[in-house]
Image (cartoon, rainbow, N blue to C red; front, side):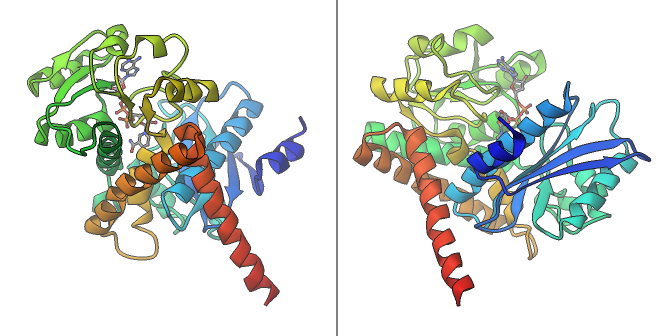
Length: 356
Ligand code: NAD
C-alpha cells in the first residue's frame, strides 16, 4: 500500500522525516491522532535496517500510543519518534540535541519521552532545545524512572482481574509467574510481596535471577515459566509471548503483565477468551509510565497525583472486563472499543466547537 494511503487507513495525521548532516541525525516522527491532546510517545533509538522499517515502526507505535492514552483517560494523543542509530555506538549529545530542535519545530504537537535506546539523560539534552519533552530525571524536576508507576499499574490490573475471577481483589496466597525480572517486574513484585503472594520468576540474565533469589523468590528456567502451576501469568519481558505454542502450556486463570504487544495476533486473544482465561490488555495495565510522564506537563510534577491516576488502572481494567462480558468479545477488543469510543466522543465536541 502507498504510504499516504496507509496513513489515511490507520488514521495518522502527520509523518515528519528529519535529517541533520552535521550530527548525522536521521529520524522520523509520526503523529497519529491529536484529538485528545498533543501527541505523546517515546523516542526509540534503534539501528533499523532500512528507512522503510523505521517508518512502519513509527507509524505502528504512534497508533498504539493513541489507544494507550485514550484508554488511560489522559489528555494526550499518540505519537512516536524513531532515530535510526545504534544507541550504544552512534548516540552523541549533538545528535540528540539536533533531534530536540526538530521536536521544537512541531510547536507542541508532539511531546517526546524515553523509549528503547533513549534515557533520562537524553531527555535532559533534548530539554536544552525544546520544552516539549517529558520523562525527565527527578534531578531535573521530572518524574524519573517510569517503571515505578508501570509496576504499580500492572499490580492494580492484576487485582481487578482477581476480583473478576475469584470474587476478591486480594492477591494474598495467589501464585504469580513473572516472565522477565527487570525494572517493571521488580516493581510489581514489591507490591505483590507486601500482599503475601507467591512469586515464581524467570529471566535470561543471571544477575536478575540472583536478585530474585536474594528476595526469596522461586526461580525457574525461561522455557519452564509458561507451565508453572500459577494463578496469574505476568509477561514482563517480550512481546508475542501469548501464542499458539504457549497458550496450551498455561495453567493460569489470568494473564496480566507489563510487556508491550503480548498477543502474537488477535487470534491469541480470542483463544484466551474461549478458554476462560482473563487477559488484562497490555496497554491498559502498562500505562503507568505514560501516566507518570503526563503528570509533568504544564505543572510541577506531583508524585501523589501520578500514583492516584495510576491506581485508576484498577477501574479501567474493570470497565474493560465488563465490556468484554456484555458484548461477548475478548478483552483486547473491548479495550480497543473503550479507547475508540472516547476518541469518537471528543471528536464530536470538537466539531461543535469549531462550528461555533
Ligand atoms: P527491562 O529491560 O528492565 O526488563 C526486561 C527483563 O526481561 C530483563 O531483565 C531481560 O533480561 C528479561 N528478558 C528478556 N528476554 C527474556 C526471555 N526470553 N525470557 C525471560 N526474560 C527475558 O525492561 P522493563 O522496563 O522492565 O520493561 C519490561 C517490558 O515492559 C518491556 O516489554 C517494555 O516494553 C514494557 N513496558 C515498560 C514500561 C516501563 O515503564 N519501563 C512501560 C510500558 C511497557
